View (spheres, rainbow, N blue to C red):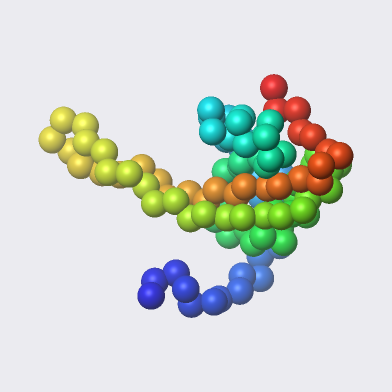
Length: 104
């Protein structure tokens, strides 16, 4: 099973290196309003503990739960050339009910 080797990385990422960008889509905006959960594109080397620490430090909030997804790139074609978009990691961070993040 590729990707399930359980290797630990010894790289210590800074909070601004962990969170790459917020994902502002219809689904993520609805999640932020109903369940107080926010979606971010994160560094593929970041662990759940790294993501929790980065969100708490950058936004001064209390994180309750972190869920991650490794997203595979989609195939794309331009003329006769074939390729695919990059693989990326997504994190959905649930905050304590007293805290909010203003993304826009």
